[in-house]
Length: 410
Length: 146
Figure 1 (cartoon, rainbow over the protein chains, first blue to last red):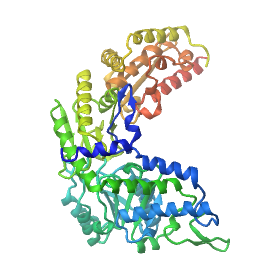
Figure 2 (tube, rainbow over the protein chains, first blue to last red; figure 1 turned 90 degrees about the vertical axis):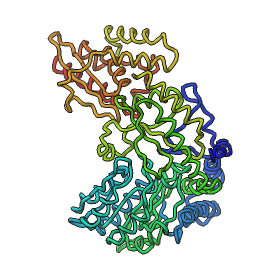
Figure 3 (cartoon, rainbow over the protein chains, first blue to last red; figure 1 turned 45 degrees about the vertical axis):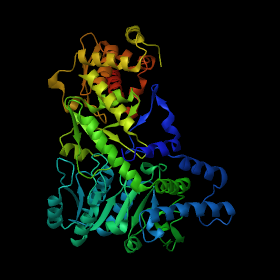
Figure 4 (spheres, rainbow over the protein chains, first blue to last red; figure 1 turned 60 degrees about the horizontal axis):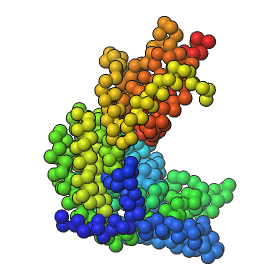
């Protein structure tokens, strides 16, 4: 394989990969749910908590200054990594879910009204459906879905037809599907949606760990992602938005940090990005998010992407030879996600028996229930998902574990 | 929790003895799968939404009936075979026992056979909710009997 030397170089950065489960060496193939953390991220958080923890912004003392610089450094790294014109356009959130809720509650409440449409796709994660349903229900607007083909690609004909039919105010879609792996043609979708007069939000949760992201080239209005799927800590993610749009949006949550001055005659709000960051943020998370990005850039995002492409091809070959296995999601452009079903066998049984052999996979609907209904997969799928440290050998072990589970269940 | 009813305690000891011969994780599951295949299941006609316990992944159905002798009779099923084996074990231990004994049962056998993790809510297999439903049904019946 072209990049089989990549895991050799980096696996030692991930102490957790040394451990065993149920007495077997861990084969961790649940990276789309959450990736493991390199030492730089683990140590960076420890270093902050041991040496320079203090509350950030406005503190007059040395520790507050060090912590603020490191946290804002994390923000600059995110901004640079995604090609954001200005770090002030990067709002730290608790994750992608929180970021979509921010846009839905702030932009949505100010801009959506009776009869308006928010267009999504049938391959969205619940995090890019439910926040829109909540605001739409509150203002009398509606969420409409675009169809997905059998192979897991987006139905572009239906997408364009829906733009014409509904004239949506907002079009929100995944960059890459967490269940199918499909990489959407986001730049094309954004251009078409903008031409139709809509704003666009791209959910990059599964793109950040696998793909080079440039929000200017994509042409979206909002981009969201989470750190923990991209080798960073849990509890932190970001919303990027075009500056003029963010400036015009009202604050969502009120409290400390987001104000300029407070009085009972009226409160004035802080500037971007702080206007949307009420309360003490996840300081160690912001710092470590930056370190995770440093780690990915050090390895090279394109190197990781090429490695994962070869793993997907390798896994498709290894799994398709097993009797009864049907791969779900065969789009030509995929991130490191392989979903499968075996007719007559519940994915939960397969996942449980693979766990017994040390192989961590995910089973179920992967928070994409509408997609599972659409594809007629009521029990969901078994999903293997890869990272930079995944080896072809681990895929062999997973395929053998699956074969053994199938033999036990038949 | 009070001491177990002798019937429920004896059944738990029986299950523990059955599983004692397996020390390998996979052998234990092999046994569970066999149990799942053999266990008498719920009447197809009763596999309705009103008997469905919503777990996150595997679906579990449970029906409870009060018998003439005042005991509770359970039947259950699942669409996942491992869950079905676990569900079957629960039925084996709790069915056809006095209502109060079921409501107050200390189900220590899952711990003893090393399958307690299946009762954790994070497994989302519907088993924990099923046990809760069994207890609730039994408690309600016991209250009526009192």
